[in-house]
Figure 1 (cartoon, one colour):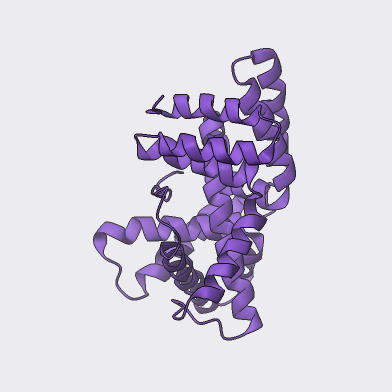
Figure 2: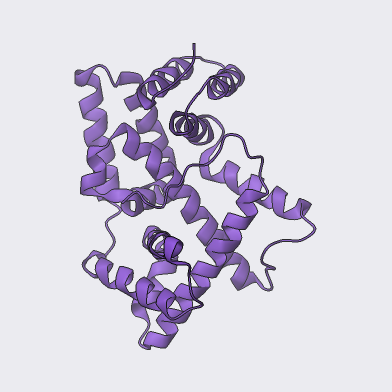
Length: 255
Protein backbone atom coordinates (compact mmCIF):
# COMPACT_ATOMS: atom_id res chain seq x y z
CA UNK A 1 0.00 0.00 0.00
CA UNK A 2 1.50 3.32 -1.07
CA UNK A 3 1.68 6.27 1.34
CA UNK A 4 0.57 9.57 -0.13
CA UNK A 5 -0.16 11.85 2.85
CA UNK A 6 1.06 12.83 6.30
CA UNK A 7 -2.04 11.19 7.79
CA UNK A 8 -1.21 7.87 6.16
CA UNK A 9 2.40 8.25 7.33
CA UNK A 10 1.19 8.71 10.91
CA UNK A 11 -0.88 5.55 10.65
CA UNK A 12 2.17 3.69 9.36
CA UNK A 13 4.35 4.93 12.24
CA UNK A 14 1.70 3.93 14.79
CA UNK A 15 1.72 0.40 13.39
CA UNK A 16 5.52 0.26 13.37
CA UNK A 17 5.77 1.40 17.01
CA UNK A 18 3.57 -1.52 18.06
CA UNK A 19 6.28 -3.94 16.94
CA UNK A 20 8.31 -5.19 19.90
CA UNK A 21 11.57 -5.87 18.08
CA UNK A 22 13.71 -2.84 17.18
CA UNK A 23 15.14 -4.55 14.09
CA UNK A 24 11.63 -5.24 12.83
CA UNK A 25 10.75 -1.58 13.42
CA UNK A 26 13.73 -0.42 11.37
CA UNK A 27 12.97 -2.83 8.53
CA UNK A 28 9.30 -1.89 8.40
CA UNK A 29 10.05 1.82 8.58
CA UNK A 30 12.52 1.51 5.71
CA UNK A 31 9.91 -0.35 3.66
CA UNK A 32 7.27 2.29 4.40
CA UNK A 33 9.67 5.07 3.37
CA UNK A 34 10.18 3.33 0.03
CA UNK A 35 6.40 3.21 -0.40
CA UNK A 36 6.00 6.97 0.07
CA UNK A 37 5.02 8.74 -3.14
CA UNK A 38 5.41 12.28 -1.79
CA UNK A 39 8.39 14.03 -0.21
CA UNK A 40 6.59 15.27 2.92
CA UNK A 41 5.38 11.91 4.30
CA UNK A 42 8.71 10.37 3.27
CA UNK A 43 10.60 12.95 5.31
CA UNK A 44 8.19 12.48 8.22
CA UNK A 45 8.80 8.74 8.28
CA UNK A 46 12.56 9.25 8.03
CA UNK A 47 12.45 11.64 10.98
CA UNK A 48 10.36 9.20 13.01
CA UNK A 49 12.89 6.48 12.29
CA UNK A 50 15.80 8.72 13.29
CA UNK A 51 14.25 10.01 16.53
CA UNK A 52 12.02 7.21 17.79
CA UNK A 53 13.82 4.09 16.59
CA UNK A 54 17.48 4.75 15.77
CA UNK A 55 18.73 6.81 18.71
CA UNK A 56 17.91 10.45 18.00
CA UNK A 57 20.49 13.18 18.46
CA UNK A 58 23.30 10.92 19.60
CA UNK A 59 22.89 8.59 16.63
CA UNK A 60 22.99 11.56 14.26
CA UNK A 61 26.11 12.87 16.00
CA UNK A 62 27.87 9.53 15.54
CA UNK A 63 26.92 9.42 11.86
CA UNK A 64 28.21 12.97 11.44
CA UNK A 65 31.54 12.11 13.07
CA UNK A 66 31.91 9.00 10.94
CA UNK A 67 31.20 11.02 7.83
CA UNK A 68 33.72 13.71 8.82
CA UNK A 69 36.37 11.06 9.31
CA UNK A 70 35.62 9.52 5.93
CA UNK A 71 35.87 12.72 3.90
CA UNK A 72 39.06 13.86 2.23
CA UNK A 73 37.87 17.46 1.85
CA UNK A 74 35.70 18.68 4.70
CA UNK A 75 33.76 21.87 3.74
CA UNK A 76 35.07 23.73 6.78
CA UNK A 77 38.27 22.71 8.52
CA UNK A 78 37.93 22.63 12.30
CA UNK A 79 41.06 24.30 13.57
CA UNK A 80 40.73 24.17 17.35
CA UNK A 81 38.62 22.68 20.16
CA UNK A 82 36.49 25.82 20.46
CA UNK A 83 35.68 25.77 16.75
CA UNK A 84 34.88 22.08 17.07
CA UNK A 85 32.54 22.78 19.99
CA UNK A 86 30.71 25.48 18.06
CA UNK A 87 30.43 23.29 14.96
CA UNK A 88 28.86 20.51 17.02
CA UNK A 89 26.51 22.96 18.80
CA UNK A 90 25.26 24.26 15.44
CA UNK A 91 24.89 20.75 14.03
CA UNK A 92 23.09 19.51 17.15
CA UNK A 93 20.72 22.49 17.13
CA UNK A 94 19.93 21.84 13.47
CA UNK A 95 19.18 18.19 14.26
CA UNK A 96 16.92 19.26 17.13
CA UNK A 97 15.06 21.64 14.81
CA UNK A 98 14.54 18.73 12.42
CA UNK A 99 12.95 16.73 15.23
CA UNK A 100 10.96 19.78 16.35
CA UNK A 101 9.25 19.71 12.96
CA UNK A 102 8.24 16.14 13.74
CA UNK A 103 6.71 17.17 17.08
CA UNK A 104 4.84 20.02 15.41
CA UNK A 105 3.37 17.67 12.83
CA UNK A 106 1.90 15.51 15.58
CA UNK A 107 0.90 18.54 17.68
CA UNK A 108 0.26 21.35 15.14
CA UNK A 109 -1.23 23.60 17.83
CA UNK A 110 2.22 23.80 19.45
CA UNK A 111 3.39 25.71 16.39
CA UNK A 112 1.21 28.64 17.41
CA UNK A 113 2.31 28.47 21.05
CA UNK A 114 6.00 27.63 20.87
CA UNK A 115 7.24 27.28 17.31
CA UNK A 116 10.32 25.37 16.17
CA UNK A 117 13.11 26.89 18.24
CA UNK A 118 11.37 26.51 21.62
CA UNK A 119 10.34 22.94 20.81
CA UNK A 120 13.92 22.22 19.75
CA UNK A 121 15.18 23.54 23.11
CA UNK A 122 13.03 20.92 24.85
CA UNK A 123 14.47 18.20 22.62
CA UNK A 124 18.03 19.31 23.37
CA UNK A 125 17.37 19.40 27.12
CA UNK A 126 15.00 16.44 27.60
CA UNK A 127 15.22 14.29 24.51
CA UNK A 128 14.33 10.99 26.20
CA UNK A 129 11.19 12.48 27.73
CA UNK A 130 10.10 14.06 24.45
CA UNK A 131 10.75 10.78 22.62
CA UNK A 132 8.67 8.82 25.17
CA UNK A 133 5.75 11.23 24.99
CA UNK A 134 5.82 11.54 21.21
CA UNK A 135 5.77 7.76 20.89
CA UNK A 136 2.81 7.56 23.27
CA UNK A 137 0.99 10.33 21.38
CA UNK A 138 1.39 8.65 17.99
CA UNK A 139 0.12 5.37 19.39
CA UNK A 140 -2.87 7.04 21.09
CA UNK A 141 -3.67 9.77 18.59
CA UNK A 142 -7.13 8.40 17.73
CA UNK A 143 -8.14 8.07 21.40
CA UNK A 144 -8.69 11.46 23.05
CA UNK A 145 -8.81 10.04 26.58
CA UNK A 146 -5.24 8.76 26.11
CA UNK A 147 -3.90 11.42 23.73
CA UNK A 148 -4.91 14.55 25.69
CA UNK A 149 -2.96 13.73 28.88
CA UNK A 150 0.15 13.04 26.78
CA UNK A 151 -0.30 16.36 24.97
CA UNK A 152 -0.57 18.23 28.28
CA UNK A 153 2.51 16.49 29.66
CA UNK A 154 4.58 17.28 26.58
CA UNK A 155 3.39 20.87 26.60
CA UNK A 156 4.60 21.18 30.20
CA UNK A 157 8.00 19.77 29.18
CA UNK A 158 8.34 22.40 26.45
CA UNK A 159 7.17 25.22 28.71
CA UNK A 160 9.84 24.17 31.17
CA UNK A 161 12.51 25.12 28.62
CA UNK A 162 11.41 28.76 28.45
CA UNK A 163 14.66 30.78 28.30
CA UNK A 164 15.30 33.63 30.71
CA UNK A 165 15.87 35.89 27.71
CA UNK A 166 12.49 35.17 26.10
CA UNK A 167 11.69 38.90 26.23
CA UNK A 168 14.62 39.57 23.89
CA UNK A 169 13.77 37.01 21.25
CA UNK A 170 12.92 39.64 18.64
CA UNK A 171 16.19 41.42 19.47
CA UNK A 172 17.96 38.20 18.54
CA UNK A 173 16.08 37.93 15.26
CA UNK A 174 16.85 41.59 14.43
CA UNK A 175 20.52 41.06 15.27
CA UNK A 176 20.63 38.13 12.83
CA UNK A 177 19.16 40.29 10.10
CA UNK A 178 21.66 43.09 10.68
CA UNK A 179 24.64 40.76 10.90
CA UNK A 180 23.83 38.92 7.68
CA UNK A 181 22.91 42.12 5.87
CA UNK A 182 26.44 43.35 6.57
CA UNK A 183 28.09 40.07 5.62
CA UNK A 184 28.85 38.99 2.08
CA UNK A 185 25.78 39.55 -0.12
CA UNK A 186 23.22 36.74 0.05
CA UNK A 187 21.15 36.10 -3.10
CA UNK A 188 17.71 37.65 -2.77
CA UNK A 189 15.91 34.34 -3.16
CA UNK A 190 17.84 32.90 -0.17
CA UNK A 191 18.19 35.93 2.09
CA UNK A 192 15.11 35.50 4.30
CA UNK A 193 15.70 31.76 4.61
CA UNK A 194 19.31 32.27 5.70
CA UNK A 195 18.34 34.88 8.28
CA UNK A 196 15.52 32.75 9.69
CA UNK A 197 17.54 29.55 9.89
CA UNK A 198 20.44 31.30 11.59
CA UNK A 199 18.00 32.78 14.09
CA UNK A 200 16.39 29.38 14.72
CA UNK A 201 19.79 27.78 15.37
CA UNK A 202 20.76 30.49 17.85
CA UNK A 203 17.41 30.51 19.65
CA UNK A 204 17.33 26.72 19.97
CA UNK A 205 20.77 26.57 21.58
CA UNK A 206 21.37 28.56 24.74
CA UNK A 207 25.12 28.10 24.38
CA UNK A 208 24.95 29.92 21.05
CA UNK A 209 22.32 32.57 21.83
CA UNK A 210 23.49 33.74 25.23
CA UNK A 211 26.94 35.05 24.16
CA UNK A 212 25.23 37.06 21.42
CA UNK A 213 22.68 38.55 23.81
CA UNK A 214 25.33 39.25 26.48
CA UNK A 215 27.73 40.96 24.09
CA UNK A 216 28.27 44.61 25.08
CA UNK A 217 29.72 45.46 21.69
CA UNK A 218 27.36 45.16 18.67
CA UNK A 219 30.32 44.25 16.48
CA UNK A 220 31.10 41.29 18.74
CA UNK A 221 27.48 40.11 18.57
CA UNK A 222 27.46 40.37 14.78
CA UNK A 223 30.75 38.52 14.54
CA UNK A 224 29.33 35.64 16.59
CA UNK A 225 26.20 35.51 14.44
CA UNK A 226 28.22 35.43 11.24
CA UNK A 227 30.37 32.64 12.67
CA UNK A 228 27.24 30.60 13.42
CA UNK A 229 25.99 31.25 9.88
CA UNK A 230 29.30 30.08 8.41
CA UNK A 231 29.23 26.94 10.55
CA UNK A 232 25.63 26.33 9.51
CA UNK A 233 26.74 26.43 5.87
CA UNK A 234 29.43 23.88 6.70
CA UNK A 235 26.93 21.59 8.43
CA UNK A 236 24.60 21.79 5.45
CA UNK A 237 27.46 21.03 3.08
CA UNK A 238 28.35 18.00 5.17
CA UNK A 239 24.72 16.82 5.06
CA UNK A 240 24.92 16.82 1.26
CA UNK A 241 27.61 14.17 1.54
CA UNK A 242 25.11 11.85 3.24
CA UNK A 243 23.04 9.34 1.25
CA UNK A 244 20.37 11.34 -0.57
CA UNK A 245 17.39 9.06 0.18
CA UNK A 246 15.07 10.02 1.73
CA UNK A 247 15.30 13.61 0.50
CA UNK A 248 15.33 16.24 3.21
CA UNK A 249 12.57 18.79 2.94
CA UNK A 250 13.14 22.53 3.33
CA UNK A 251 12.50 23.09 7.03
CA UNK A 252 13.68 26.68 7.32
CA UNK A 253 10.32 28.24 6.51
CA UNK A 254 8.48 26.69 9.47
CA UNK A 255 7.95 29.22 12.27
